[in-house]
Image (cartoon, rainbow, N blue to C red; front, side, top):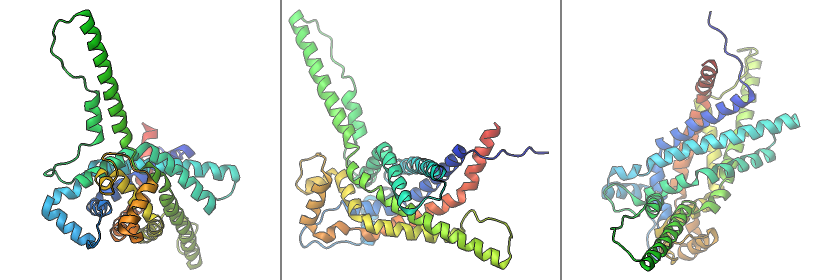
Length: 355
C-alpha cells in the first residue's frame, strides 16, 4: 500500500503559493510578449506638435514590416526571468506576511492590511528584480537582431572592469612610478564607469517602487472578489445539496480569468501615468528627446513635467489602450494559470518531502 503524504507545514504552504505564482507570472509574460513590446514602443515614443498619435495596431504592423517578427520577441528571455523571479518573490513575501498577520491577530486579513502587506511585498520584489525589468525594456526599444542597438549596461560594465593588455617595455624608476599612477587612474575611471552603468539598471526605480501599489490594488481586489465568489459558490452548493461538506478551494478557469481581468483593469487605469513615466525614465533616447543630457538618469518628476510640456496632460495616458489589452489579458491568464497550478506545485513539494 502506498504511504500517505504528510500534510504541508505553514512554510511549505507559502512556498506552494510562491511557486504557483511564479508559474503563472512566467506564462502570462511570455504568452503576451509581442503585445508588451508594442505597448513599450508606444510609451517610449515622444510626439511633437502636430504629429498624429498612432494606434497600437499601426505600431504593430510598422514594427513587423521594418524590423521583422523577431523584434516582437526582443528581450523575451529577460522578461520571462523577471516575471518568474518577480512573481515568486512577491507571493513568497505576501503569503508569508499575510499568514503571520492572521496568526497574530486571529482574524482574517482586512482590505487595509492586505493593501499594506501587498505594497511591502512589492517593494522587496522591485529592489531585487528591477535590473531584469530595465534590460528587457531596453531590448524592446532596441528592436530585432537586424537593428543597431545601444549597448546595454551589463556589457559596458563588464568591459569597464576587463583588464587591458599592454606591450612590455623596460622603464626607469620614474617611468615605472608614472606607469603605476596611470594604471591606478585608469582603474578608478573604469570602476566609476562600471558603477554608473550598473546603477543605470535601476533607472526608473522611483516609479517602480510607487507602482507597487498596482499589484497591491490588483491582488487585493482579486483576493476580495475571489473570497466572496468562493463563499457564494459554497453557499449555493449547500442550498442545492450538491457535494455536501465539500469546500470550494479554487475557482473555475472562466471565473479566475474574469476576476483577474477586472482587478488588473482597475489597477492599471489608476496607476498608468506612473507606468509611462517609468518606461521613459529607463529609455535614454526618450530622455534625450526631452532635452536631458545624453545617458543621464531622469528623475520621475522631471519626466512627468517633460511629458505634460511636450504632449499635454493626455500624454500621461498615451498607450493606455495597448497597456490595458496587454496587461489585462496577461494578468488574467497568469492568475488563471496560478489558480490551476496549486495542485501541481503542491505535488512538487510533497514529492520533495518524500525524497
